[in-house]
Amino acid sequence: MSKVTLFGCDDSEETLDYKNNSTIPDTVQVGAITYDVVTKPFIDIDGERNYQGSCDYLNTQIELVEDMSDERKEDTFFHELTHAIFYEAGFEEQDEDMINRVGKVLHQVIKDNDFENDYVETKDGRIYL
Ligand SMILES: [Zn+2]
Image (tube, rainbow, N blue to C red; front, side):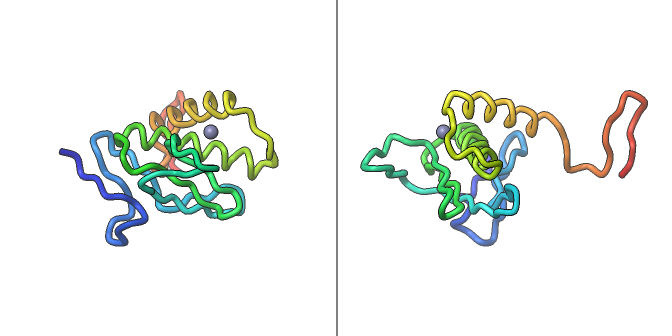
């Protein structure tokens, strides 16, 4: 059983920690704006509750539905993060299909590369920063 702590609900844990060591942060910096990342039992948009997540630009908050697998939650997080990135870049009108595609690639790039290290891999070896 993987360890799961719902972010935003427990101050003693800052990240999710599960099998692939993925994390969803409590906050995420997009441009000059700090978005809070929270989970909720459901997301209501104009009476519709059939959403996995939402990106609230005005309140600078990414919301994720609690009752999803960790992987689905992470994928939804990157989708909503992509909305935030495009919004902060000035794209107020967004094409959902494009956000879907870019979000999935962004998820893969972040997941499959280790940007936490103090070095970068080059074809000639590691360069320490
Ligand atoms: Zn979307």
